[in-house]
Amino acid sequence: MVTTYTIASGKGGTGKTTLSVNLGTILASYGRETYIMDADMGMANLGILLGLENVPVTLHEVLAGKAPVSEAIYEGPSGVKVVPSGISLQGFQNADPELLRDVMKEIVNQCDFLIIDAPAGISRDGVIPLAIADEVILVVNPELSSMVDALKTKILTELIGGHVMGAILNRATLENTEVSVHKIEEVLGVKVIGLVPEDPNVRRSAAYKTPIVVKYPSSPASIEIKKIAAKIAGVEYKASEVSEKSGEKFLDRLARSIFRSDK
Image 1 (cartoon, one colour):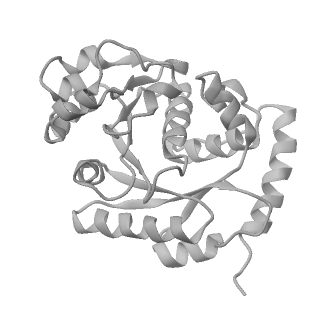
Image 2 (cartoon, rainbow, N blue to C red; image 1 turned 60 degrees about the horizontal axis):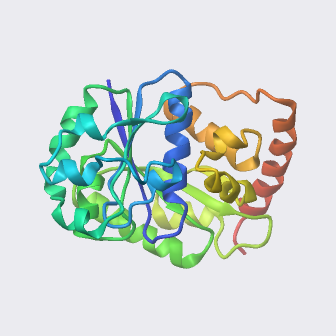
Image 3 (cartoon, one colour; image 1 turned 45 degrees about the vertical axis):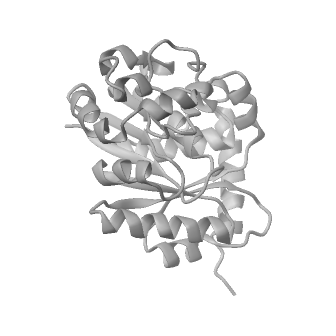
């Protein structure tokens, strides 16, 4: 039975698309048929991260009625299937987001997991991915403005009948942050299901157009993303390399720093 997750954030620049790509890649590596769909049709970046920015058919063409969804599915790392949106504004203008439900009906019969990269913020195009997912996961950065914007997205999700599974705190550091995990859970009313640290290898892997979990599998960010994917897939996470153990120590220090109680 397929489970659909929409990865959402209240503002741009939180790392939402990067998390969507990497979570989907790890889920596929577990042998689960996994699709990633770029529903951020106006500011599409998912295809760029995977080197699919120049493919002939994208979700834009599908939602414009010019091609079937089968022609817009491409294979990515670990066998993950990718449905990218185009990068042209004209393609965006011709796309009808209302047809997204029909596209999903075709895809869900083919996969175990569907990861939807939603548009940031609150917009008409962003409502559908929030409403049609089984679970919505909010991506939050360690700053007050990000938490406030995420709360707006959560409220909107619940108003339209969606459900927020939890939040991922992304780009966390050992330095003092404006908000703690405890505060995020208190304000959003959901659990923080993962804490992904700031990691320079995220940028490096993006330059190679390769997910960090593939290019730098032992990096601290990769380790935490693997843990989150394991929770989603219902499997036990196991550190498979000696180098990952040092990464675990870093994450322990990070957790102590950010899971502190507010004074």
